[in-house]
Length: 586
Ligand code: ASP
Image (tube, rainbow, N blue to C red; front, top):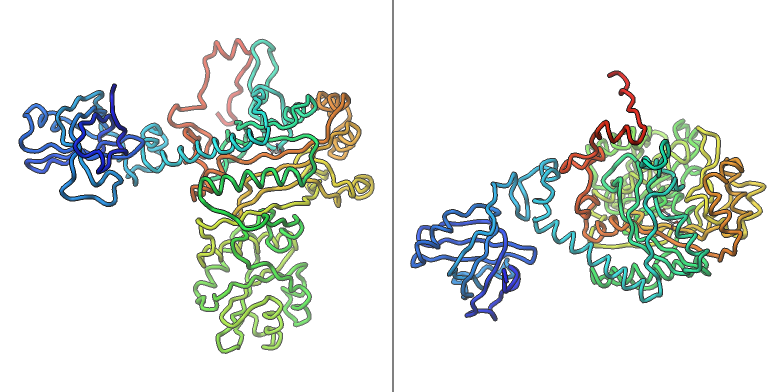
């Protein structure tokens, strides 16, 4: 037996016991007569001590230790003379009687402590060392726990965990596919699933009326902090359900996760907000409702004062930052520059300060009388001491910019508290989205999403207005999950493909199997998928999902640890009948 206890377990109650520990040397301190070693494993750290009376052999062994050596230590648990209340094991130490080096270690390229001195790149290259650090180990444990709670909850609700294949053909989530050449079928390729969407629907046709899978999905997209080329979904589907049933089932799951992992409970049902309301008042389909600052449409109020910018604007909207009238000129100028950045795209920003004495100070005083400003302030719900920020321009673009400004100001005012959680369901998404560039409709969710019954007729007359039975689960401005009630009628599905610009032949080629399956008795069904990595990072209070994935890729989609992707041998290409074209310009 290598150890009697893990390194995080010993307490005052163990004093007097002889124990054997095994782990990694985090630190050695030689203090003349005494020497101390911090021994670490994933359960914690225990201090080992050697005093001046120890055998010469033992003292020599300590001398020879370096950081990250793997050792086995035998000794007696004693009460520490100077206790360390910051350490869970800080009341005790182990007086060594024997030490065995199980594995020597080269000096690691960065310190393996709570705060490492290593930069991102080097820690990614030596990910296995970074994973030894406390913060990452806690992340992995959090992830594990969330997966277990999810499994238990769904199992209790009668869901079956069923695996679906990874080597399939294109799925319709709207990203690029990763493709895999087939040696047995030269010239043909599998696509890795962007999600198990079609398979989970087929499982409903097969009668497995409650399915789930914690499953890897693959999307070849440009990467950001909350995106990885391979990521994990909690993927679910249910038959004989309506939207309400799906929302209730998964609200239950979310509540259970919040309660069991974070001890956070919510009063009452999660709020529901229509997509329309979210866009109109928060400028986003994933509103952060930890704080107010809803938009106020003042397009009409500001017209007719000879201020051409507002007179010609399709939309003028305001947000009220409570208590922010103290913003300095410099801060306001900085915010104006911020909204003018190309990513935000506003032309400028107007402010109204609601001074403590009841007067108003604005950047458009020239055009608006104190009375005008008062009316605007009242409409925006501003009180003395508040700051009103106004953007104007084309409607969609301005709503979007105002949404981003709202988040930025909230960040500055400390309103985006990571320990506070504000979940909601965004519902009633439009079924379709018109794309100007390609002059065609795209499915807002995916082509299998059902229109609302009452909007069915719009498919013929005004498809852009049809709403979908689709929903997103949003927490703190992050889309954590999304799903829909599906079309289960092959006729309606064919009509949908037609609207999306598929010829009947294309629809048949890509999704014939599903259209066919629907001809053999398809139950009404619907489902949802949660971004598991995002769920974990939300719970962990982080913005990036990377640290909740054991072996993630960097922003160029590379695994710098194993150096992948990489060229393959010519023989492998020959077997696949693949020729690599020279890169342009090479
Ligand atoms: N397959 C969908 C997605 O990945 C989720 C769903 O509709 O269940 O977004």
